[in-house]
Amino acid sequence: MEHYTDVRPQSNRTRGLTHTSPIEVSLQAALDALGDPIRRRIVRELADVPDWTRACGTFSHLPVAKSTLSHHFSVLRNVGLLEQRDEGARRLNRLRQEEFDHRFPGLLALVLEEERQG
Image 1: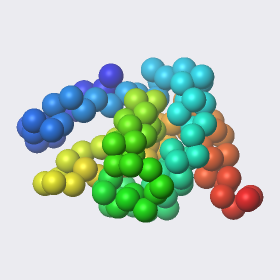
Image 2 (image 1 turned 60 degrees about the vertical axis):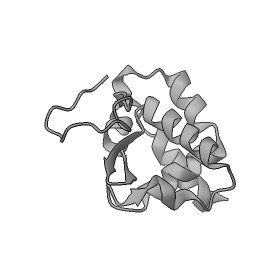
Image 3 (image 1 turned 45 degrees about the vertical axis):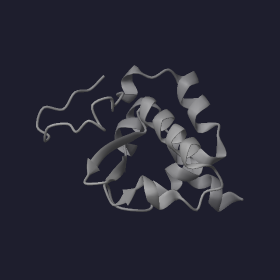
Image 4 (image 1 turned 180 degrees about the horizontal axis):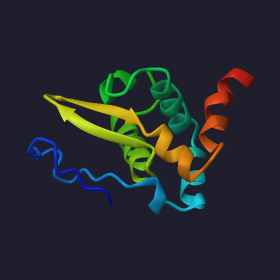
């Protein structure tokens, strides 16, 4: 797990927030995470915006409960696709595209092209 030392102190909310490096992830885990259409949509939407500009709460348009959405974010974070940080009451997201592409060349490109092909 990666640990960041140059960030502000963790709040109670983020103390359990861990980020997995894509290097630590198996291909099967990456495929399992990207096998869910809601998670693929989250990834595509994050790819279309600058880092740290989309909060988790802005995904409320997706057809799942808030708790399920939180689970999807956790799965994506645990396979190294997302990095998250808290700013006030908002949890912001960054798609770790470069790091993930280095570990699994071409896999993320397939996910990002999916909507354009359909």
